[in-house]
Length: 337
Length: 192
Image (cartoon, rainbow over all chains, first blue to last red):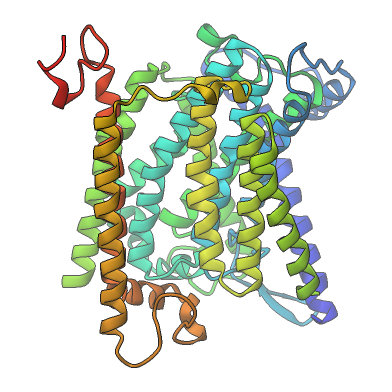
């Protein structure tokens, strides 16, 4: 049996990280509307609380009180399961991300990650890949042509881009020689130019593009695609089930931003200060991840949407060969120099 | 505790396996199979093989099952009646498929035999014995895969390559103009 301080440390870390994840996801719904308003020269939500800061809470209450509609002919079991399938994987993936280095409470020293397992990079990919089930099942079980098309598009898209995503991660794993996220971060410690961003620029760019496709975000949001598919896979969803899909999407964005930071921006490392205390490292991590969260919003309100065949041909004919070549070159350089 | 968990998971695996063949709706069959994979992955985890567990989830649950779902939804298989339809392959196609499968099987059998010959220090490499506990170290798995089990590894990659080529061939068939089977390369100019 583990000691009491260890159990307490686990509980505290889990509460902190999951509270932070859900809070950030809720905050992102507000940030999305604020940033879109800012980019489009509008005001945005400003009625609930100071500067509209309580808007996510108002939205949540509104979702709870909305009527739940299950369309006729929908598969009742899968229709209810799909939102859970969508939200849970993104929340599970965050468990292995190291948010800060050593910290100690109650005389127990630990890293700020819920589970610092040996194969965490593989775990993230394996769990993250399950998010597609929510979208497919939601699309199919709704018994609606728009939902079905959205679900099919999403599954094709997510499976295609997952390959490039994994190959980019593998290049980083080859650099660090480990599948452990903490080791990958430690490998980038020290100078700012030790970040994988500089040694793996191609993998970085491909990874960021693939995260947009994996999270179904603009300019690759074909699972929703309002002009063609009404609302895509969640056309028929209402109330809290819709809110769960929404939550899953935003949690996935937060996780992807954290992963990009961990793999390419040195994670929680503070440049030229490897021994920084955890209360410096945590804000450093959040600041780096915040850049990518903003990028998600910025791109959404700036770029037009691709066409679906363009998306597929970019994924298979450009991104995948480039990622493969990058991995091959990385392996060759590592083994011969 | 771990033992109890194992029996629960084993029962879950069997139940899900029965569900695969018992469900009338093919979509639920796929979901049962997914459940079986999850139980298996957790058993691997209990046995102390996290790498295997993660790979199981990544490859089977994350990719292959998604494609199963994709196909089932595209074909819109509502009930079992649809399976009564046979695919429109001729005897020739069946013969080619059988022959290539036989060749691949032979390669696999030969390469496993090869592996047991090269491992002349007594222990059989095929089924039971792992060299030591540190097998789950990713590095040692990789070393084994690229030295002792090189041939089976290459044979299975050959099998995957053959599958890919077959799939491309099937997909190309749709581009054929006019009559049924016009796109088959070996039928060009034979019938019609």
